[in-house]
Amino acid sequence: MQYRPKLVRFARSRLVNAAHAEDAVQETLLAAIENIGTFTGGSSLYSWLTGILKHKIVDCVRRSVRDQWHEMDNDGTPLESDGSHFSSYDDPEKALERRRRLEELERCICQLPGRTGEAFFLRAVMGLNTVETCRALAVSKSNCAVMLHRARSRIRKSYPAGWTAQ
Image (cartoon, rainbow, N blue to C red; front, side, top):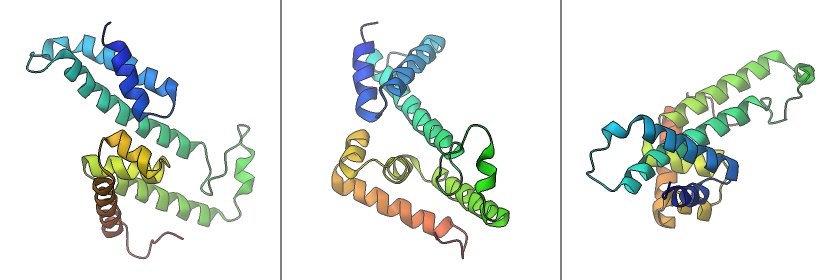
């Protein structure tokens, strides 16, 4: 397909992992094939494909964070594959409380609106620096700062009282 190289470049500019970018493009092309009947021609085919790809990139980022959270214990220590990580919990109640807080934080992040949520997710969860976040979202530094400020404010308001980060 003639658009594939452009789509791969687009995905690579937004995803750090090259394999994830390739996967996102493959998922985009499959979705386009399955839904070609919905393409009305109101925009160029490349624009339509890029729109699909943007959604696939967000899905990819969400998946990688979710996988990352499941592969680490509540202290951020990588889990061992043999299941012996359970002995590292000093207090099961504290571990349960940490898990609940993480789940609540994840809920708060998921409730952030569109681009504000993407900005926070890329910056705070994925660990991208400001320049990388701006490039991924195609926004200016000042716009990114405003989005991050709004995201943090909304999270503070929706996070349960007394559950501040420790």
